Image (cartoon, rainbow over all chains, first blue to last red; front, side, top):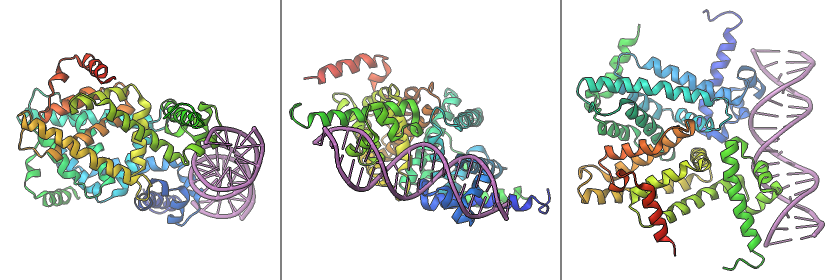
Length: 211
Length: 211
DNA sequence: GTCTATACCCGGATAGAC
DNA sequence: GTCTATCCGGGTATAGAC
């Protein structure tokens, strides 16, 4: 894929729109992030957003899928729960992301919402993924083997989303602390997370993942 | 306060609008619950909704405060956590409520949203209330006294909201089960909740609360 | 005090010109 | 690939009928 050719500009515009969406969302919030507001931020006409993303819902949705993709890429070389914690940290530095995501999940709750299926599948996909990691912890004797891994996964997933809502309302709320504490209640305490050396570990991992 | 006089009709209308709002919300969802849709359901003109509740946000907000009031009233004569569980059950039978509430909390997340303050206060009020009940449990030796009651309260509050989102997406999701399990992880297991006789207990309590 | 009709504004979406 | 013009629908403001 070359940067030249007739498609280069389009791809850049597309990305610029996605970036601006996040930016505007984090400064003006959901109600402020109208198509025209985002367009203004990019420096184009509102109709152009429609050209790249046919509807507003689609635009927001694409920000989320891109985010999911980023998360997956950032997770190289760390254990699953460390990834998760790191993700939470990362998101806390990009408030627009969580704001946009939470708005979208809840909106998609409407029975006839076009993205409803997406979130159902997302939950269905994440749950066993987390459950598998819990099974690993059970195998190594950290987590009580009597506990149902799927159930813990569902609860942790719910907890994190609830924490995010509260954090949006109270930005000084320490999601990492609360989530770490929750993990511990289920017997999950990856050693890396207790040393206070998280950042160093992440740095090293990021370094190692680079080509 | 008599039912007669020139105000009776107004109070009835007002209530009818609140009821219809919930009704329409649970059938048509957030996007479907437009002012005109609700007005149609009540059988009046859209402008009348404006007369009673000046804005749509206010209307939804009033449904929520009424709900909070109901919850408080329904809690007579039961322990706090039993109340809570019962509330969850009750809500699961009225899907519009949770749908509306979750939509509203997340929307109010915008920095300049008029109801933002309300939710901040709501959280601030609920947390110590729950924490107090946890202290009671600690005093009677059920919950590990080393645990910070406020922190547990925050986590439980977050967990329930996260569970509600997932439930909205997957109506067969058993919030009561999941929440009960979460409570147990924190050492909270009110005896009434383990007998399977919940309904009978609620009936008796309701009976006793009647004049 | 209760209610409607009407008019207004803004946001999202579409059509078509350049 | 980009814009302008236009439409449509939802929320809101107002005037006034009953």
